[in-house]
Each structure stands twice: as structure tokens, then as C-alpha cells.
Amino acid sequence: MDFDALIKEELLPYDTDTYDYRGLIAKILECEDRDLSLLHETVPGCEDSAILTVAHDQCLVFHRMYYQHPLMYKVLEMYEDMIKHYIAPMFKDDVIVYQKRPTFRVQLPNNTAVPSDLGGDPERPGLHRDSDFNHPLGEINFWVPFTQTLEDNTVWTESEVDKGDFHPILTDNGNMLRFYGNQVMHYNKINVSGRTRVSFDFRVIPLSKYNPHMEVKRSVQTGRRFTVGEGIMDYYSTFDKRTGGTYTFEDDGAPSPATVTGEGAGDDAAHVEPLGYTV
Ligand SMILES: [Fe+2]
Image 1: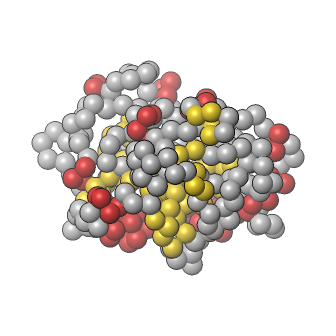
Image 2: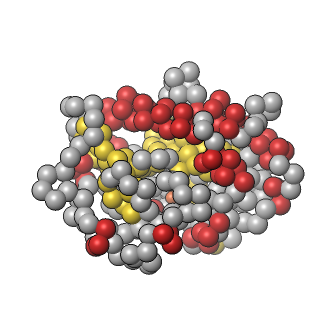
């Protein structure tokens, strides 16, 4: 599929027997005895948590459980397999650049799933395009919910750049949304549904749209660099369909960290999120 087709919003079913993220995540979050959308019932008071902000987006108790649990590595194995066997075949390019570890999100009752102070207004908290926050051009977004999504706890997005036709993504475990979150505006509502949403999301760039010599910036939320590599600060990895392995850039490859720009440039330690995991 070429880039123009990939940026069209589409709900894609996937095999939940092969990719049982929900089962693993329910175990990790100790929520096997009830519907995952009732996760908030397992920790008293979490429905009254402060509204998420950029500074606290990744610090929820459930994020801590997820990133510290050994089963998280099973989730990542599953994810790697899905990248190779389900995601990569959608792309016309032989090589894709993909987010190494998907971003885990929990939208509790009375809260948002992305920082409310990213922008927008009270009706559209956190309204943004990913490119507003340093994400490089060429990214295609994949958003994977593990609970049924309702109007108040899902992603609202426009279908095309500047179209303004915001609509909720209503779906359930077993479907993922592919959309052009790098360029289309999207946001969450305050979740008054009484049901928690659990999801992860990731981004993929076809090699033909990836510029290894771009001016490197950091993720606003995690401080990680939008570079390819195995280091803890690198945001992306690669997959080459021809070899089944990673891809090596010719010449000097990815830009040197010395070229990192933007807020906080050059101070890695200050920009690793508290748990030290890549998201
Ligand atoms: Fe986004």
C-alpha cells in the first residue's frame, strides 16, 4: 500500500488469539477477575486522580505496574511479531521504521488519556497533531484499544487534514485504528462514561519517508530522540522484509545525538522518564 492509501483512516481487525494483549495486560494490572474497563475499581480513589498533564502523563499507578512487570516483555515480543507479520506487509516499502515500544495509555473515569495541557479547549482537551510535538513527518499512527470504546473514552479525530469532521472511534478489543495522527487533529474528551479505556499506540514510517539526516528532536512526553537505534534514548527500530532483520543505513546513518535540538537538548539523564523505560 502506498503512503496516500496508508494515511486514510481505517479500522483493522487483528487475531486476538495470536495477539492476546488484553489477556496479558489484565494479568499485569491484576484485573483478571473483572472486565478490563472496570480497572479503576481495583485501586480505590483513582477515579479522582488529577487530570493528566505533560509532566504526569506516564506516571499513573497502572503505568508503573505495566512497565515494571516481567510480562511486559511478553507484550513486546507479541508486538515485534505483529510488526513483522501484520504491520510491515501493509507497507509498499521493503523497510519500515517503527516505534520500538508502543505507548501504553489508561483513560480513567473523569480523566483524559493524553495530557490535557497539550492544547485545545475545554470541549477538546489536548487537541493536537503529533507533528506539533516534534514527531517527524512520514509517521502513520496505529491506535490499539483493549477495551470497548465509548464516545467519552476514545480518540476523536478528523478524517483528513484540516477537514474538521471530528468523530469518535467506536470499536472494541481486536480492532486497531490506522490514521494520520501526525497531521490530522485529534483529542480525547473527559471520560464521564464510568468505564476505563486501556490502549497502546505506535507509529510507523516507511523508509521512503524517513530522513536519517533530519534535525533530531525529542519526544515532548518522554524526552526520547526520534532516532533509530538500540539505545535507551532511541525511539525507533527498523524492520527489513527482505532479510527479516533490522536495516542498516548507508553512509553515516542516523544523525549524531550531538545534533539534537529543541527544549532540553543535550541532557539525556534529565529526559528519561522516572521508570527508565522506552515508550
Ligand atoms: Fe497524538
